[in-house]
Length: 195
Image 1 (spheres, one colour):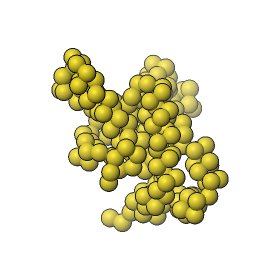
Image 2 (tube, helix red, strand yellow):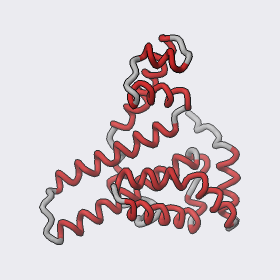
Image 3 (spheres, one colour):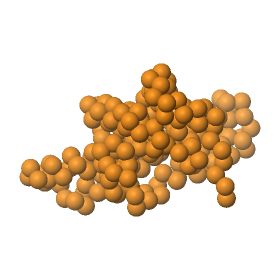
Image 4 (spheres, rainbow, N blue to C red):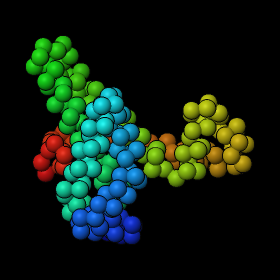
């Protein structure tokens, strides 16, 4: 199956970054900094580390604008993948240093922590990428503890439509539980790793 053409904005942004337009980096940062910081924080659980990862990711994008290939998917997903890989790489490095310093956690416990952090970050990204209508339905049902009837009434939907949106949202979120591809366990492309 052919990969759909990337959005025009993504292609233009990649071209502007490749030309070295500082305004393009500023625009990209304004658009995606909260996504990058949020994903990094979700994996690391540390504000300072999330700030550092955010700087590293945007620094990498600035220094390597051709690393993004618009034919491979959208810019948002690419940036999220860079962020997740960089955060996991940093988490592994920090844990290795802690173990060398005499930490008590086992490798198995740490790998579980990495897996859980990855899953949570993927779920956050999937949720933030959902259409607003599905996200609003999930928020009412799960964050505000509404059943599908109450959710339908609050959103002005039929009960069948509320159930359909909930089912679709849960199916989308279930993909976060799928194991990472093997490349996620190696050094990440981009900041802190090699391709």
